[in-house]
Image (tube, rainbow, N blue to C red; front, side, top):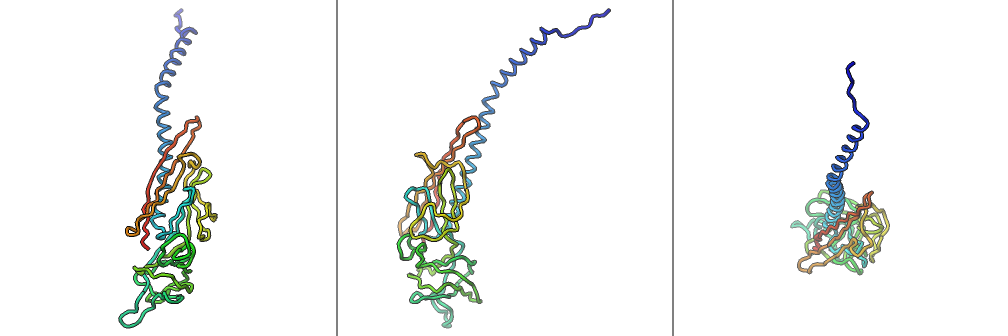
Length: 270
């Protein structure tokens, strides 16, 4: 009878051993590229998170009310008053003797707008010069009035009756929605809004806190920081420097850390 060929136990063991050796060699060679890809992906995710947060802060700071940006003593909270619009007020009567001017000698509740009509906001601010003290300071409120209505074809703005301390050389006013604070605390970058004006900066200020970025370093020597550099009066340009470090630890215990730096220019021409 014809003999039937087969695989012996020894041959099977040899094949398994060779396959295991080949598998171990392949795993050794591809391990590093896979780990490198995972690390690069994690760093890219951290960079994207930090970049998004920096872009949002830069955009908001550029829309801040002139001379309203301030940083607390710890350097981890930056506050400003958010603007939603603005315009120019009538300072003189027209050639026919008509028009409603904004009076700076007595409390006034209405005035004409020259140019586009701003959208309704919480308050109107005229000629904000300082973020501390009690003169021409929107935080204090002497140059800030509740903005209640727009009417007429002129058009005309109605505000709470207010005597503004100083006229604006450019005849400008700003519409503001309230103070906003970005703060680094508890391992997060938070955006605070919906809280009351305060002459002295309070950190954290309260109100509603929204998370802008997580895993933020808020405790080490190289922690999250804000630095406000005021420009010369002739330039009316200030700079807010933002240092944002973000740290992430993988399931395997690998620590990834990225540190991003950005400067936002702030216009302080009131």
